[in-house]
Image 1 (cartoon, rainbow, N blue to C red):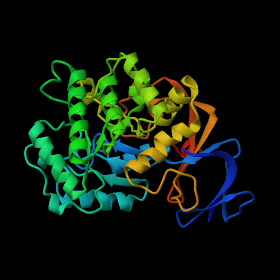
Image 2: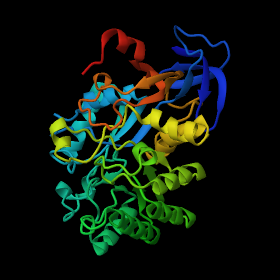
Image 3: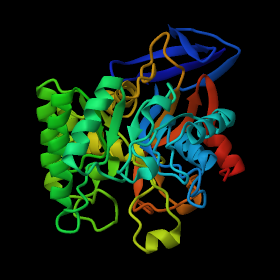
Length: 401
């Protein structure tokens, strides 16, 4: 058994001081003067549910020069994440049970973070022929052709009806590729508006990836107000950066968009903050590949935006980074409550960290935040009751690549 003592416990619903007792990967008691064989003294620290990311790219198989399951897992742990959901745009694409099962088995063998794997919607992500729905493994949580929008409206309508009939859920990167060369904003908005409407008419469960504009968020808000089965994520970089030419997809938007997204979070209209962790080699990034690594800076950016800039509570941070995304993925995680999975992060808010390339655990270093200093340092990440990341151990031994 493991006990975490003297910490300030913060989750989406509570903020108080207590000890946490862990056994067999579960939280079994919360109270005072708890004891166990192994003790972590969290005095002066914040104890939160480990973060859950609905949207990451670990590039494995096929693009492991950028990231692989192991380096991605270490990056997640260093950022305080206990669970991540992987996108399907690998090589080969995750469009067969064989590719899916291989990734899931290797993730299980690593035993670092909890990984779920999206299954492609269309074969080879081409948007022409759907995968064989009858052979999708039962453990699949979401289908996604992330990086590719669903193009033809008639085809999308029939797809949504099929998914609803089969009780399959889909994550969508909203972008009309025919409009993108002309107007990136309208390319996102027109498909988000369309698919919100189609979700309501078909009953298909839709999760919108990385919403970045005012009108796309308004579409989600409308869908929720009508009881449509939709949910949405925003990224740390889309609520922190404005009017930047750093290449991501969807692009960094205006300050007005940033302000609207932050207010939507505060109003409870956003289900999750997800990193869209997208590693690239230095050469690829220099050539214009869109994306950034986000797992190791996400908490610090979200803390800066919500708490420091907008005077919101740590509980809202936990709602957005732990409980909300856990709900999207149907995990029994994200709260510090008896019976919940013992995925826990310990944070020191008295420390600041300057983002340096030599301290990044990801195989890639494509981040616009190098040199920036943020409040908060991840001290420990516990997954299924076991310490998987320890800042002091890292400082003594160096980051494992």
